[in-house]
Length: 113
Length: 113
Image (cartoon, rainbow over all chains, first blue to last red; front, side):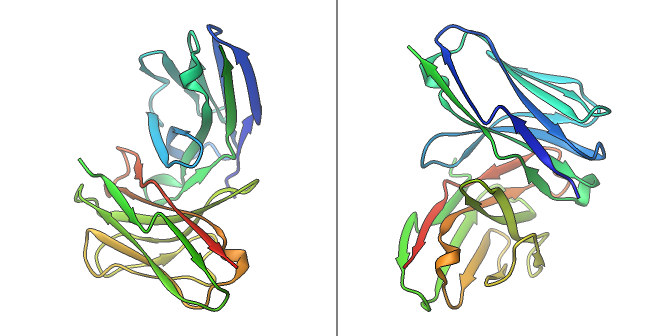
């Protein structure tokens, strides 16, 4: 059974720092991997989507990498801002194109001014 | 662009009452999903549908029923609500090959007392 783990569970950094959020998964047979952002009491906003054949995706200050063989993905946030404070969720689409989206429990990020 | 719309946003039920959560998407997506999010458990798949008139069980289907009578709508029903069903419910949709990722609604916060 696919399991997705996110480390750390919570992270507090001062504004301006570069930071890395980690995601690992137990079965490398994934179709793609998606990073989401969730603000308190709100829904999920898709940040980046990496197909299984890709190594990384970038959007503005965000860069996500994927190493499928080792079962790992990282989300890199450059020059963090207080507005980046949120919970970041990693999810893998498991078992090929007919599988299900399996979520990690998230990393709660707090960026202090 | 509405994307995925969930109604209602909040609801309080008494144990044993029934209710239906409505999800509507305007992206012509084939696949639709219902998830629940609980503290410490992450998001878990309740039921999903791969097309109009089809439904399938996810990881935690007990106590829920679903229907997909129209392609754009996916209904989640609770026939006899229990306190264990207190949760935040998210609907999502995707293109059939999932290469473009999932789009989530803003959620329904349900409390069963």
